[in-house]
Image 1 (spheres, rainbow, N blue to C red):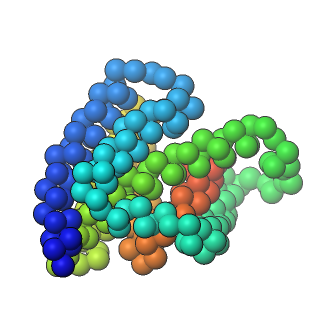
Image 2 (cartoon, one colour):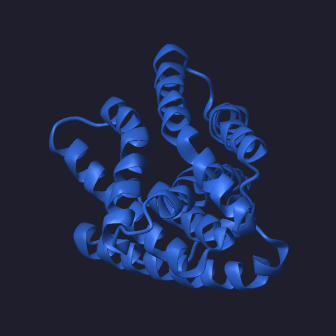
Length: 220
C-alpha cells in the first residue's frame, strides 16, 4: 500500500515533464532539419525515450514498462496485425474507390525501399507508443482514476495531436491541415482504446507501423 501511494504522489512531475518534452520537441522540429531516419532514431530516442526512462527511474513506476513485458509479445503482435490489417484494407479500398485506380500485383517485399520505410515506420511506432500510450495513458489513468475511458482517451488523443500538428502545418495547407488533424486525432483515439483494453504496447507498435505504411503508399 505505501509503495502505491509513493508512486501516485511522484506523478506530480508528469505534467511538467510532458510540457518540457513538448517544448523541446517543437524547438527541435523548428530549428533543425535533419533527415527522416535521424528524427525517427536518434531524435525520438532523445526527446521521447529518454524522458520516459528518466520518469521511470525517478518514480519507480512499473506500469509503463509492464506494457512491454516479454510475455505480451506474441499476443500483441497478432492483435497488431489484425487491427493494422483491418485499417490497411479499409484505407486501400477507400483509396481505390476515390481515385478509380486499378489493382495490380506489386512485389513490395522484394523492394529495398519497402523495408527501409517499414523499419522507419516501426521506429516511429515504438517511440510514439512508448511516450503517448505506455507513458501518457498509463499515468493519466493513475492520476485521474475517476475519469471515464472516453475522456481519458480523448485527452491523450489531444496530447498526441498537439505533438504532431506542427509537422502537419509545415506539410499541408488550408483544409488539408484540418483533415490531417482529424485523421491523427481519430487514430490516437483508436490506439488509446486499444491500449486501455489490452495494456499491450506491442499491439500498438505493429498497428501503428501498418497504419504508417498504408498512408505512405497511398500518399495521405
